[in-house]
Length: 392
Image (cartoon, rainbow, N blue to C red; front, top):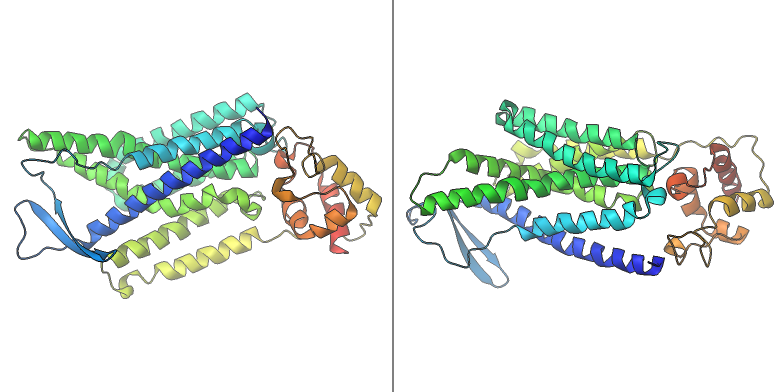
């Protein structure tokens, strides 16, 4: 298949991923907020746990939550599940089209691990499955009954996965795999725990049998986990556009900070929806601020030692011809591109100088380019390119 058709397939899957992902995130945010806004009222139908009044789109809504199913349920009962399922399916499709098909460019960095594409793909698939199994075992163990300890261990599991990925895949591939790792946990929570448990509870209630309360507690626990993981995973999924996040050896620490920042933000919003006063949740604001400051400091451009480095235009063109032109020319020779990425052409000195900021960010201060370091650019060549551009 030509690179042009692959790009269209990529776009179609990415668009679908965004659409269903927005739907899943929206329902997660809405139902957590709805649960937290329920109030006991003087007059409520039998079996109702709480109600909420809402206004939207020019109308008013009165929502009631039953902990015990009514004696009859309508045939049009809505199950919110396909948003989660399709988000994972389209996300894995993107992983295939972007990272598996072009593993040498996007997934593998020989300076990290000299993997074959098949090896990288197998490691990817097995690690996603292993991540869910470990997470599920932790939740079902006695640790799962201690909310604080469980949160610490799930946090440690994700950071450990980030550390391992950063020592196996390219920086870009490692970050996207952290997103896929967390996204898989979230999707299987819905597919393997939340929906099956809800079906069992519904069947028991309609049959007149008391449902197992552990099923509801387990489903609620996984739903809350998904809610708190949503904001961090969003950053992971767009990380390929921001090489400063992953183009350094401590990228796994950036993952840890993103989880802290995103989790704190989600907690602030959840407790605000629950009506907590600012005095009880103010601590999340400095945590987010400190986390963001630490992430900025950690990802700051590395100091480039160009003392004594003298580079002429001919040497720069030699470096660019060896490491850049295969992708960044009017007609790329790289099999993955029919057109230069982002329209950046680097075949002349004027081209290089014109795109100075991007070259410095992607190939000098960071190591995001060349993709997967397929051409084995050296630190000396990066320094030479940086010295030339800093003099312009």
